[in-house]
Image 1 (spheres, helix red, strand yellow):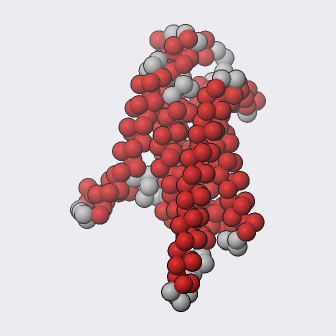
Image 2 (image 1 turned 60 degrees about the vertical axis):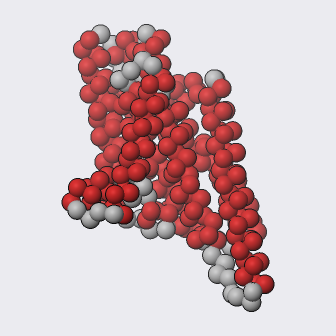
Image 3 (image 1 turned 90 degrees about the horizontal axis):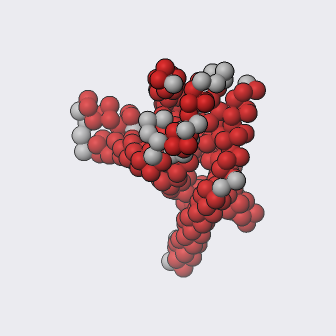
Length: 255
């Protein structure tokens, strides 16, 4: 664990000594803030219009604001995850320090998990920016906090899975742009696989739908923890880190 924490702290520090972390935090905060205030404005306008028509308005902040916002964050993840992971190993290759890692006494698993954990912690920092907006909602409204926490858990699991995929792709090239572009393409495919279930119910369509990242996040946004969805994300994380280990092993043999 000590080696994992050393790698994690070093990697996390490298994000914050460069403009990368600050640009990501600023852009994520601005994008989510825009989504939040638009959702809140739409909610208020709809409630006023229904009251003027003499209709009762269901003041369910979770359904009208929180759940759509969490779904929007999962889409934003497709753009931010590649930016977080593209440098993890690609930069090491470009700088020529990957050989030092490959021949160091630190085990591959410790290096991989430490870097992945640093990327996940940076993502947690991004999520903290959303908490400020939700704090305003809780200050002036009365939403249910339990579905929000479950939704955050779903976002963390989803991000962990996408970060594991991006970590593996980063080991396959020394070009950060290529690593980011391929990660974005793979994550986007995993996100849209579920679309086929809308017009086809055959076996291949059901398989693609099950492989979709988006399919397994819906229950979390409803405030429901479904074991099969949690197992899916944990499996993707394991496979992503497993293939990363195999890629690192090949680098060690070539060093």
